[in-house]
Length: 469
Ligand code: 9MR
Image 1 (cartoon, rainbow, N blue to C red):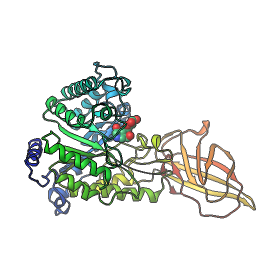
Image 2: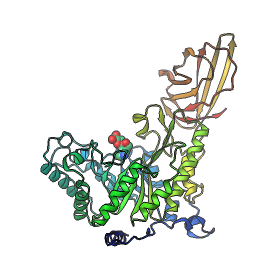
Image 3: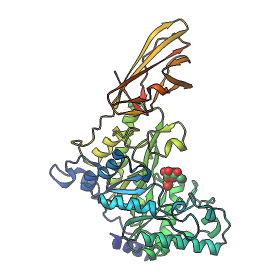
Image 4: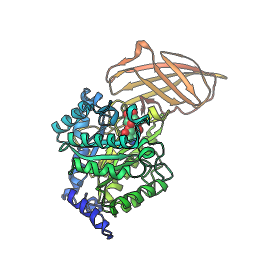
């Protein structure tokens, strides 16, 4: 594959366009008859992906590998792992010339033990830099040396362990121009990108070398800027093999030109990877939103499968508990395949079935990890009393229950701390009822200043919609 890619670059350098080479089986693999490889009965994402000739990965947080459920999902469901943070510059070269590979090595060991590919992330990025690089104090010559030295050390250290590298990450602004808040762009100018790829190629000629970015999934000014850069790099013979489409997407806003955009990059002879997929929504999640999210994970998966040069999809975080989204976008989340209790969501099922897998033994894709009873126990002209009882399918140490209150405001509560923002109500456990065993229940109550009648709202436990009890 590697040789093919490099050859494609050479052909383009000679001014001849080539069409995308086959990485996955392309659209035909989706229509294979029962009994053919593409129709394999697979119960895990990685089995199903393998049958389609693609990889399926997760961003892994080393700090969570001690959790048995987390590490078992990470190892059994995924054929590729990306270090969510452990291979970034601030972690690997916190002070100049002294390298720390402990986090990345731990993940490489995990991957080796579980027969997984490692996707390297990331060598040159304006963010998560130690201050000796980011403070702008280095001269151009010095920064160039530092950049090349960093790339050479990491690519040498992980040679043979890492299949892909995000060599340059997030080099563009939204308007398609080069990112001007990057210390590399500001200090070194446009040429730093070609130089980074050449340095990485010299250090590890076998790793596939990618440029990775976000908001480039559809055809837009930013993806146009990247497309033009990649074409120009290829025409100069720069060793670039792949483009990473991060794909931090928003529910109901999947770009309609996603496939056409992937295809135009594929037509340059490059491999494509969906590198950081998540689909975020406004919280609380409810059954309808989770169902649509499942369909949209399936649609993104089918988009990759439809473009033969799309080599794989990595999901950014194993579960909603691990996801970066709530910390960055307050009020949004539930963006991954597994809920806060590490139970598979409709998103898991959507991705699995889009990959041609079927649910069998293995995780139960039933999204309902809880049931909830919401009862107005008393009502008068200008007030009501509500009791909420939740039964959980997972053990809890602390809980958050959310729902939209259809009428009035909360004026008092018991057995929970209850807060309200607009119609969104959030109840968190009291100290005496934080721990709940599998199959156990808890109740809390509150009073409102409205006597209006209404249909009980959907109640969510830790971000997962509960079935009505
Ligand atoms: O998920 C990562 C989070 O834990 C870090 O705090 C954050 C720091 O910027 O980076 C997150 O991962 C980012 C990835 O490295 C590059 N693309 C965007 C991702 C989400 O911010």
